[in-house]
Length: 424
Ligand code: ATP
Ligand code: MG
Image 1 (cartoon, rainbow, N blue to C red):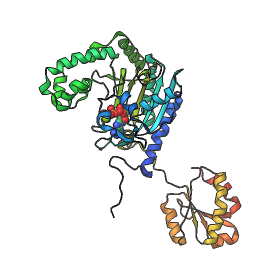
Image 2 (image 1 turned 90 degrees about the horizontal axis):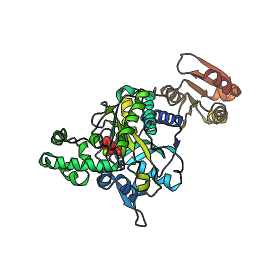
Image 3 (image 1 turned 30 degrees about the vertical axis):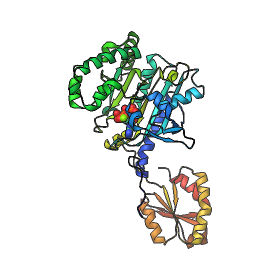
């Protein structure tokens, strides 16, 4: 029989690797919490219509990346490809938008893409969203939060902030016309995708990696020249605030982002440590989205970071949390009476010292084989129960680090002894 394997692009994260994930996740949660953001937990599945209406019909995600299926009642559902749409849906539905809201979430997202390094079909993001604040101070806050996170993680020297304003939708409309005008004159030089986008989503052409298209783009009109006054002022203020907080950035007038709902500020944190998949965090303002999804008009801004790519960076830069041994103590208990004595004593020790990681040997076997396992476990101590200990009501504590260090003590003294000796 053939064995069943995981879906391509949907990876297992094994204990060796999950220590990086835990390190990343606890750092992110601590930073977000310290800025007053509250965690929101959202469903993985939403109505397909939610994503079509928010992300946009002619985007990569909606055109070809969504995992959609019919529910038993025939309704079309989709595994969420990103978090903002669901977060906005939840904020509207639960009446959260009467006052400013700072929210964050974390979890898997699903996109049908070609799997490669830093690109999966099930991948994981942390996102933050701030609602109800139209001024660029909140744009600055979100960016400062990410900058702090890179410092906490130790990767600040390896990421660069790219920043742009894509203006109001009216400004974008005017620019769009100018761009289409210009590009239509160079249609033959464009790649096939870009020719198609000329009708459907011309701004996305700015993202093209095709060399011919890039040559044409070099002389294309730039969005910056079409910005409305308010977007210009807000962007200038954002830049001032970032400078005041000593966050460096590069203005990239070609940065547009691939989702339809953005306006004004857009930003990406990029690295050269990961090859082609260089964006580790991306975000922007989406002032029209709440109303577009049926809520009372309410400005919003957010970002999402890709956990896989950050874990790859931590690995590439050898910024691992020290590979933790899985146990502090390994319990050797050969024979039924010894096993009974160990079970009777260890729960008391766990009550007294809940942080101590105690692995009790299970599955039987000789003294010798159990002691070998104790040595291999990386634990600092072995606790040994054999016939002699059972008869005497004692336990033997043996150091697995220092040769010959071993003592025998009454079981009743064990928790006290460990409390005294087991702190690192
Ligand atoms: P890309 O240009 O790399 O496809 P994107 O613009 O589609 O990225 P966003 O929707 O902005 O990505 O998602 C925010 C972040 O989530 C990205 O910057 C990236 O770090 C991560 N991300 C997006 N798609 C994937 C994926 N398929 N696998 C792993 N991480 C991803
Ligand atoms: Mg993508």
